[in-house]
Image (cartoon, rainbow, N blue to C red; front, side, top):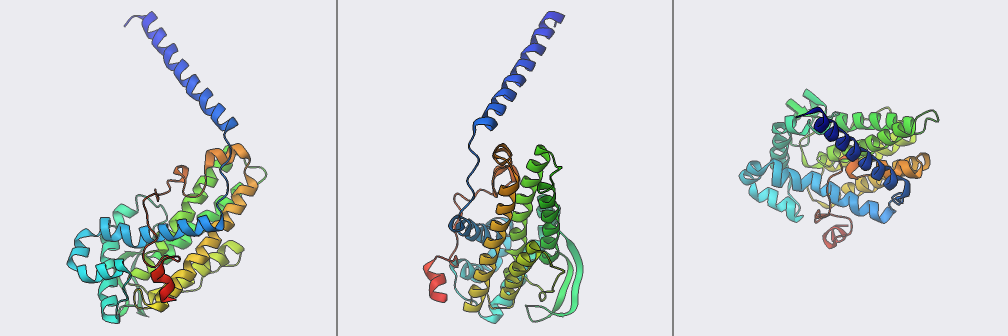
Length: 295
């Protein structure tokens, strides 16, 4: 190409970039910030997110072959039918094998996924044995790592010296860590594990997280889908509702309108939130007839 043609192409590219930048600036300047979620909206999203993380994705995507090998118990869980103790043992051990086999894949989406080896081998587990042999994603440790990252992001958002773009970045990161917490803990009642261990939770964020974790861990030791399991699961979901609302309040308070437009809300595309448009709350969702009957 001749120099005049190259120069013309260069000006064309620069012009296109300038137009895109101007359009983006105009959008940010004129767009209405997203409204905070109501408690009802949060509860609906939490139920659907929990079922997607605990059942739909592991059963129907990550663990298709394992589901086929244990079809009767997996279908019972999907329908909301309570399992007896022996069935719960079978299901949780099979479920744990799904998480173990897909560690490499799941780690691509969460920098806080924590793998431990031969954990708690002197502690009673929830499948009639001791500890968890081998390497596995320890949801307790992974979720606590997310909480630490969430706490750091909120501190940056609330720092008066932080720049506007820094606040946007850390708001999106806070939303992702908030989502990752339930992506780890939603699997807890379904899988092989050891009892809950208290953490060093002293601030409001940590104490609220501890309520979430404590209830999920209590459900781990109930037969799957039993009335006690459902009650503990619902307590965990209610506590996570409060955690979402707590984070939302702090983010909304410390971000300006344009910053909220750019950062988006919890579960927004900016924080790689999963698409829940077609997700369902499942048979034990808090507003389903089956769940109400169990309570």
